[in-house]
Image (tube, rainbow, N blue to C red; front, top):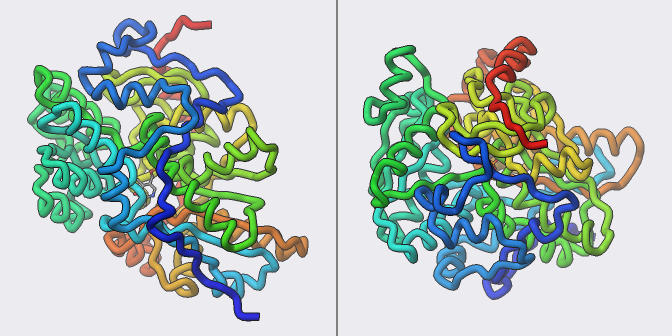
Length: 456
Ligand SMILES: *Cc1c(COP(=O)(O)O)cnc(C)c1O
């Protein structure tokens, strides 16, 4: 029998509502705290940074939240994305398992990040926001938000982690092409940036530092500018659930249902967007599934971080949330999976790992690039190094099936392509990449700086 490669949903079957896991969480959500007082935050404090409509989604208990028509209309530029059976990868592995991937790399900027960028730009436009500020690591989030703000006629200021600004000029050019302003962080434009530069003039920057700069600019703009975050928060994950909702419909077309779903986890948004609709089925209909979050061994937030209250940024200006964290003072080693270097993790992903609904696995850099190379040689797509962490875990699961003879259905999210990460592939090919375990002493040191939260 001829096997089918791709499962396409017609545009008319684009989901019309996002799935909100708040409705089904098996543990009550923890409060979000003010970074100064460490008391629960007020909506007024957060409304300096975000429009009320977005804050409403953050707290909403509604299971389904309608996708506004103008957002659906831009989604239709590239959505629904294909679900692909990785037949050649299966063959290369000689596994009885069926391997599938959801291909988010086909978006105009090459990753899943547009799913929330479009929604956030829409709600800000509706609220009358004139300009947004944000940070970007490797540049995927910056390029997504620059396209989204351009489509809705909003200005954008981007604080880009300095090491990536140097390593990834092409992403900066995409952002500038859409009309955004891009600065190498730490900058001398903010109090916080200047203080970092004074202490460490050659600071490579970090996501935490860039977040502090973008938050400071918005918070001190007298309401003219709002701030936008590309991961971690509940509303971001909500917007990403379009990935998993489409996937479930596509698995129906394929006549299969996954036994295991896998995503790479930086702040948790593509992972959660892909897997939460499957968890919805587990929580509400008892449909069994294993869910695995893949992270780098050099930034092992879920596997080695503490599950506790911590600041969202390095300067301790952003709200404090209960999450898995390596400490807000964490400055990661310069591994190439730039998008997976955040010190914290989405609070809902953290809670579900803690509760046992999600497994977490750390993978090493060399094994990740080995998996990425096999994937590109069989499926003909160069994956983003971030996505390659999910590919590594999917391959390991498929090899385990080969050992046991089990015919499992394994699915992962291909969060993006690696066309702007080719210098990392070059370094791998030249033997210049190394495995990197985050030292325990650094974990312990960072834990000493956690906020002293009095909540029981
Ligand atoms: C940003 C990014 C990630 C990591 O972010 P999450 O919020 O954890 O999804 C993963 N893959 C790609 C391609 C990215 O651009």
